[in-house]
Amino acid sequence: MPLRYTDLDTKKSNYSDFIIRRRFPTLLELFMICVAIISFGVGIVLSVSDKIALCSILFAFGGALCLYVITQLNRSRDLLQATEFENALFASALNQDHAFSFIVNGDETIVYFSPGFKDFFTAFTETGGHDLKAWIEAAQIRDEEAAAIVGAIAGATKAELVCHLFGKQEQQTPCRMLIEPIPRPKGFVLIRCSENAGGQ
Image (cartoon, rainbow, N blue to C red):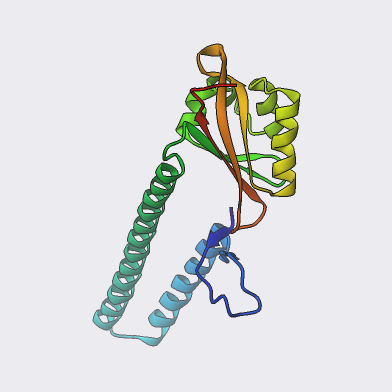
């Protein structure tokens, strides 16, 4: 996914939540590095007649290149670890006081679901399903409840309702469902469910 979140100046007219991570394709990067190394090496060989000076220059260039590569690799690993930590932190916060949660985008595709969702709907997640309507069918949600869920997602409106979901222990479980549109980025809806002990 070529997008990443960034904190931009909200006063700018072109403010957005995500910016494109612009970069060259990997093969093109490797080609450019090889061309630069060969050009530099040939230029040094042709311009320096002293072998000791030539070796010193090539050694310094190779060392600088290795240092750059190592620094970039360490930076990438640090960024990956920070991202994974943030993801775990946000996932834990989403599931606070809820049995499970999941996020749906505008075309009714499930783009994220919590471990609780996977435990609740094991059969559905094992098939690799990500379609909201397929989940509604797998959860055996009643028609009026399904219409309310789809309507809230399509209209990006907040809603709270009690649904009877089939999944956990292969029986109908009454759950209190909270549907909330995510303000940033737009087009995503957060759905959180807690088991309703009282039932309906």
